[in-house]
Image (cartoon, rainbow, N blue to C red; front, side, top):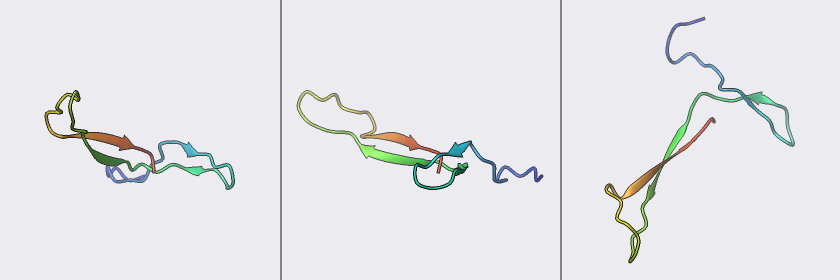
Length: 56
């Protein structure tokens, strides 16, 4: 097995209702969400939130 940090490994299994079980990937996604603005809403210091989604 390679010692590279990019070696493909699985984070687990993905179970589907309508197809075969498969290995989960080792990638993840970041989503930037603009913070809401308005009266009574505290100001967010950077103006956005980071959400993570994984695995893919």
